[in-house]
Length: 138
Image (tube, rainbow, N blue to C red; front, side):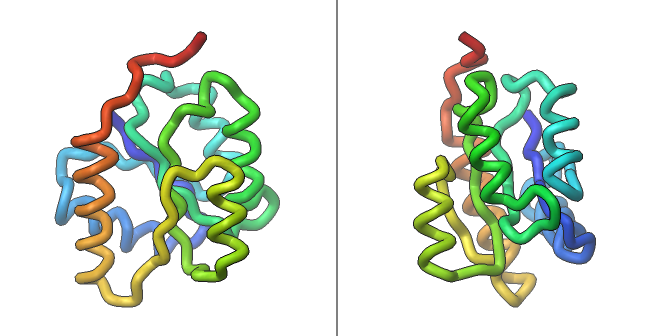
């Protein structure tokens, strides 16, 4: 199973990749540096091979909010677990994310040890414990 990281900031993407290598070394983490590259990746990736999506909100062109809207509009992708992982702790962003279909909302921590803990918790639940419906392509 793959985890897809949608993050335009290369430094933050590398930190997240480093955290995965520390806490979930066997996870295939696919990095998409924009909403556009994310949807290109989705087009080529069987949905049943995706465990969950980590999504940043603050991206140019196609924002994380736009990604959530577009996921919800596609029956074959709408069921994919999507965890917003962003720097914003704004209550309006949190509410909007859930209203648009996010399954969880996590604010990025400042310290690497905290990022490792968060990634470990996210992966433990969404990557190991959570059960997906197989392929939900109706």
